[in-house]
Figure 1 (cartoon, rainbow, N blue to C red):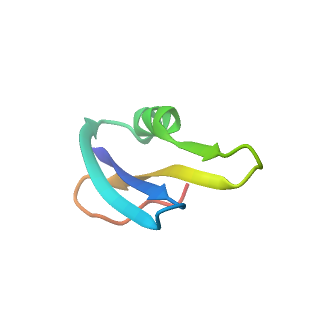
Figure 2 (figure 1 turned 60 degrees about the vertical axis):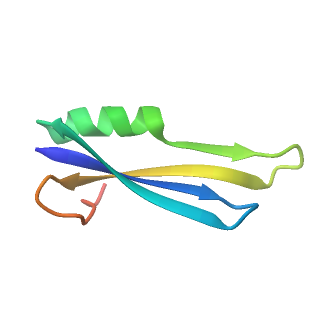
Length: 68
């Protein structure tokens, strides 16, 4: 079983949030597919990154991401 470790970053405000989604994914591939749907980077009009969502995969029993 796998889960997603989600990091939301607001570069403008300097805010960072970390969440865990215990989706109960049975395979790493299923978790990876969902992670790709959630991850994003938003840039402003001049190209600076303002917001970012980083999603990593971990085994259900720990909070350490698996190398992707």
